[in-house]
Image (cartoon, rainbow, N blue to C red):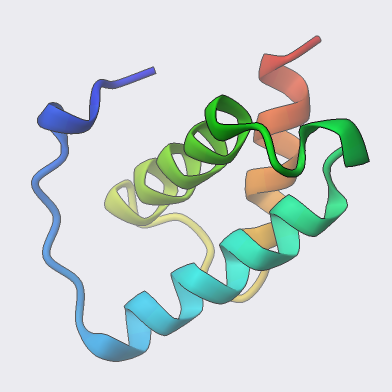
Length: 74
């Protein structure tokens, strides 16, 4: 996982709104005991940023971030 200092993206307001919605969707879908865990929430956020920076999907970003999160915790 990239450290936050390695992230340099600049996002327009609509993209930030989509990223925020994706974050909320993904966090609500992770196991309940991890939903308030700072490290889990940070990982989800970084996965979303990584996807956006690589031109990843916008429409299903929350689902993709959730799947990435679950794959990295297996």
